[in-house]
Amino acid sequence: MTLLKHSCSALLITIASSMSFAETSVIVSASNPNSTMDQATISRIFLGKAKSFPDGSQALPVDQNTGSKTREAFNSTVLSKSDSQLKSYWSRLIFTGKGTPPKQAGTDAEIKALVANNPNIIGYVDSAAVDGTVKVVHKF
Amino acid sequence: MRKNIYLAPSLLAMAIASPAMANDLNINGFLSVGATMLDENKVSVADADEQGSFKQNTVLGLQVQKQINDTTSATGQLVSRGSEGYSTNAAWAFVTYAANDDIDLRMGRLRIPFFQYSDFLEVGYAYNWVRPPSDVYGRVPFSSLDGIDFTQRFSSGSIDGSVQVYYGRFEGPIFINGSTNEADFRNFTGLALSANMGNFGTRLSYHQAEIIMDSDELAAASAGAAGIATMIGDPSAAEDFNFSGQTSQFIAAGLTYDDGAYMAVAEWTALNHESSLLLDDQAWLVSVATRIDQFTPHITYTNEKGSFDSGNEGIIQKALPLLSEQSSITVGLRYDYDSSTALKFEIQNNDETTAAGVDGESATLYSVAVDVIF
Image (tube, rainbow over all chains, first blue to last red):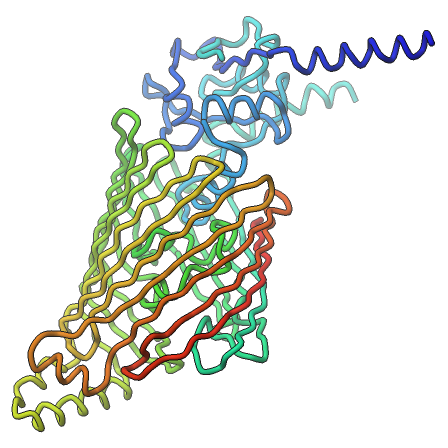
């Protein structure tokens, strides 16, 4: 009985934590001179339509790995595209030499390390992972 | 071990850091395999027959792209087609010079931007059909040229798009009605405009070229036209049936919609020939689809209709006889097995109202295909 109680509460905690809203931060290196960016600017960079930051320096977007919750949230909120729409979008660009999708560069920790070390890289992580090495340019 | 964990991100950082990232050699490929079965041999659709065929549907493409320096890149795409006995040729082979973020100049072998799907014509994975509808797409039996193009991308508010202008020449064999003809299309030039806003896309294109073709079939038809012109007492009309250096024009307009759950495509195209030996025609398609998880059922209607010139030229065209009028309905299902593999099933009913002036037949084509990208 005690065991059942425990597993029930464990289950409830699991459900509650997966339902809780995780805020996502779009980040650049602390040394990147750009401050805030709107959703449209970020979307253009991640869809390969813009190749530079508002200040003119080169922008290199990196994605979280496929399957990450943060990636799903980013795709649907910032890019306003479903997974299948994105697949179709990139397959049409790759084979015309017009563009390649952002590299998949891991999850929160790896993305944060990459962004911190290179002022040209832009990524997105769970807001809980943000620290002083990176700068948040957009939150949702 | 611990050291490796810390090393991994920094190695990745080096790999991604500019210009190391830009120096990557990108290799991508696509492969389509499939089978078709036609229930009626009298109708010509997708080179299929009653015996069932496999090789007509096999297409293998390999693409290599290399960023050479900050502004210049090289792209090559080799395509091998079962329908051409697996001979391999370059669909794309060009050098791109990016003058800035929004302007590209390309030189080499380029895909001619005739249709909405021209850029990725053979990449089955990129669309829902087993193949683009032949009533519309099959009317231009070649897809690349050698030349130069200029692309300017633009964005304004929520609209973004591009203007592409090209000039070049196409020399090579083209396959018409099962026979191979040597073609030389000179002063080949055109313009393509496209714009996207949210879920909507629109595209307009115009193309023209001077057509020179060495074809026994066309020479015979031209001689036939001269005979009919004399018969109806207007020998001068025969001059319009010559076939060297006359200009042909192609116009296309398209609309797309994709909100993730529903997709729609409409495309209208017209061919106008200066030579009366080729019949002007119009063809269009409308296609709708819906995505339900991994499944995408879709339905497409296509229509193609030739039109006669006015006056004695039209009388001669009718007597030759030229005229084709056909329509088709395609019902299909795409199943996305994973993020790089699609399985497709399709039933296409083709109705030839008239073919080369005589009453046509109707036939049903059954197709299955597997499309992979890698």
